[in-house]
Image (tube, rainbow, N blue to C red):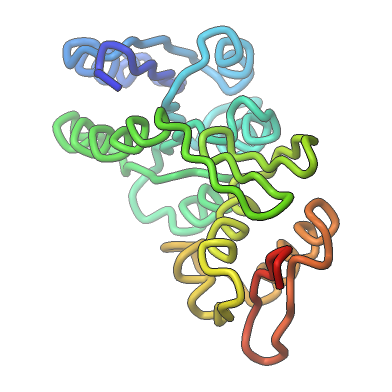
Length: 228
């Protein structure tokens, strides 16, 4: 995907940031829309359909964390790249950002050159998404382009982390993935407890089918294909 086709929604309540960052992004060739609040972003996003959202955490009325969570609830934004703007050393906010479904974060004060490099790296995956990577496993069809699963023709939309966990397990059917490996590959740069994995597995069992997941007590989980 070329820069001129990439749409970025910039959300911040500081006019200076909207002006400076917006100028640099437009000058680089990206299509830009701006919003001054989370509430406004939720109205613009469905119409603009951005590929990437730059979202400030500290905003009045509806903060960035809440805005991100509401966006991730909508199927059309499950694979949208979301990057947070956060004040330096806000470790709690950064952790909460990842839990809400963010892909990355940028600390303030924002340095345009660094931001542009980060955006370039993050949007490389859009070219891959365009290939509509689809994996078939018996009665399951895993669509990486839409973060969804088809079971006997019925589409099931999954939140980002559930989809990433399923994708990891299904990448090697029958292989036991240890808890530490799952945490390092699915919850990168975020500290969460073992209980987080169990909760996500339980949700996948309900949505996909209990028969596809085996628990290896004290070790981890594995995906069981139809053929096994």
